[in-house]
Image (cartoon, rainbow, N blue to C red):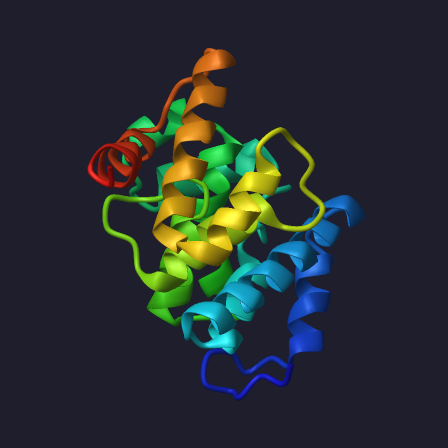
Length: 196
């Protein structure tokens, strides 16, 4: 895929290199899988494949940064201090979007919002938000109980796929007795409860 210059001045290969330099090979393979799924979902649901590609390639840009770097940015840049109670699983999306903007020069708000919401979802999600949220869950390298059903749902009804992923993510967090970020509860209430 050729990038148009509309959303980034970088060519796809240049963006991929910059992303790859920030992560392990295993994480980069995941990122490429998310891009593959996101572009396919964008094509299916009539969305810009270029924007889906850029959002997918950058969604985990900050995933492997040290926690101290996140804490510093959260304190320095005026984030809600409660964010410090959560870990990398939340930080790498919310704070990571700002790193993508600052370090990669990507300023498109749709792309940045999709990065911010890719792990938590939200009550209000754009088509791109849903594409990245679901693509991250169903990408070809994922292997966990229920992923096959999630992939099938994503091709039939994206909203149902959002609901499925949200419900199963919440069940997993509860099973692991992990602290649940409030936005994840909002996502559940909107897409699972109100979607029935």
